[in-house]
Structure formats: structure tokens, C-alpha cells
Amino acid sequence: MELTLLDYNMVHYRPSEIAAASLALSQLLLVALPWSPQQQHYSTYDATHLKPIMQHIAKNIVMVNEGKTKFKAVKNKYSSSKLMKISLIPHLNSAIVKTMAAALLSNP
Image (cartoon, rainbow, N blue to C red; front, top):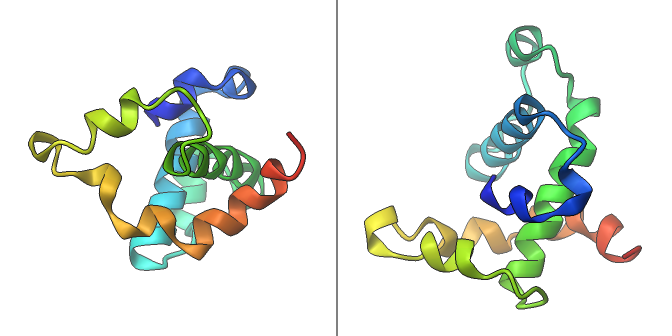
């Protein structure tokens, strides 16, 4: 989510939308669970609404992982053992992330 703070294309999204999209993306990556009806009910956001936000987040992840951005502080911060090296988990380089990001990376 911290990467979204650096992305001008994300400023028009509400923090609750970014949080919901981050949760949806993380549960898809880590446990292969889709956005549930209960999550939709309580967040008021459906999967269709969250998909473009998830794509932006995925694009930011790919850009940082491939070194295509000068904003590397967030990745460096979360690669420390103090923060459980979360930015180094293999899930962040998965085909799911790359596929989600592909639409936005092909149209800069």
C-alpha cells in the first residue's frame, strides 16, 4: 500500500478502496482466495470495482521489482529482517502480479 503513495495515478482513489484492493490482491496471491460476498458486503466494493486498483498496485510492484522506478525506499524498507523481509517473498514476482500489471505496463 505504501507504493500507492508515490503513484500520481492513484491519488483519486479513496484510502478504503486502496486498502480493500490490497487485501484482495494479497489474499489472491497468498492463499488463492477470491473477493468474497461477505467482503463485498462489509467493504461495499465488488471485485469488478477493485480490479483496476489491484492492477495499479501490481504495476507498482513490478516496476519496483524490475528496477524501473527510482522509488526503491519502500522495497528496501520492507526487505529488512525487522519487517520480516516481506518485500522479498516470491509471491510478489508471480505470474498473477505480472499478468495484472501487464495491461498498464503496455500503455505507460
